[in-house]
Image (cartoon, rainbow, N blue to C red; front, side, top):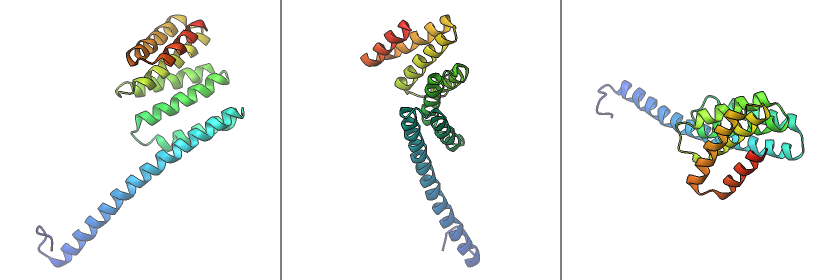
Length: 167
């Protein structure tokens, strides 16, 4: 018998409710894990579609992943999806959409300690802005990415910046 419930009928109801709550919490954790797994699978399928130059399928997979992750609070995964979407849109020369996606990734990463993803977002954003002839903002974004790569000691990231400045 539960110490806070004196009546046997209410005790059974309280136990049933408590059991239901525990099962529901466990299921919600499983749903979250399944969602992340499915989102990552969509990202892999999108990358495979890019390799095959099936850009429509790549975008479709990213949109499906975005719909799955939208209600969650996993900003790191949301940002990674935005970066992927910005990359695909950059490749197909949809620069306004690519700009929007990259900017959203930077915003999502603002409060997180994901410096590598943030640098990647700034670098991509700078490339996109260059294609949109917004050279001042592009240089600013590329410089932010470079500063992050230097602080991380990431030489491949720094090489990416040299490439971005050459574009």
